[in-house]
Length: 336
Image 1: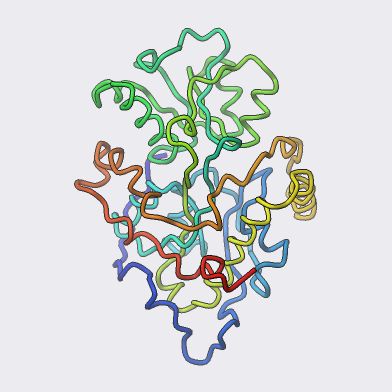
Image 2 (image 1 turned 120 degrees about the vertical axis):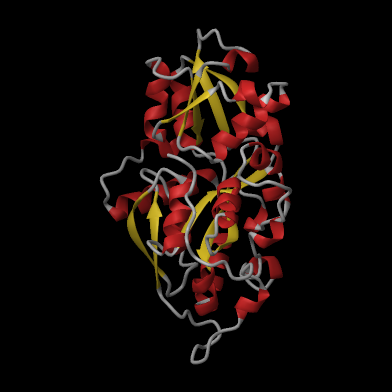
């Protein structure tokens, strides 16, 4: 799908400290609203879902309204009010905000490290060995204008391809659960795989890694959860509880033995009864998100060249206008 469309709403400020005061009639520490609508991900457990199951959201409950396979679609749903929060790749967050969407990023929710990353795979006997071999080829990605799109562009540019040559590399939208088979059947030349889907595919054999984003950038935060600015202003305590709860879930995954994390994920999926499979959970390796979900300017500026090359922005971006860490109490040492 094309990257997120413009939202015809007025942007007001950048969701910083001014939004942290509770409105008249609310009590500090008491959520103004106790239900948050969201989209999940099939066969997996999101950080907010884990936070709720661990009791980190207190009286705030999540209301699942369906699944999404696309970050841009997820944050667009939040921007238009179809859901209360969504998450997407940093570059997609920039694009939506630059298009006029009144949202603010409040916490990182996914990232890459030496255990958890997104790889780009070909069949074992594929003639594709080098970046220039990708000219004229098809690469399966889950959506356009998001993480894989930016990584591919960065990889090709780093290896000397011009923007005209990069445009000849065709990105094809394929649902993540179908990408492995699309590679094996030759429907695409290369496919982006991440998380347990990647590990499951590699375990079967017959695929070869061409490159991955950890090799390009090292450990980094990949995307953020966003909330609407008006939601934050009206519901600062709910925002604080939610953001801090997600931060606690990140640290729980980091500090808990792997077997216990997988067992918890399995229990959550089994309890919600959505006819899902837990088979690939055994491949889970790490949370991937840098410490406590703290957002930094670099999480956005890392993609500045891609944002300009693709015309999303015309000049250098100002990262501070896209996010706030004000509601993450773990960063203040006030919560444990």
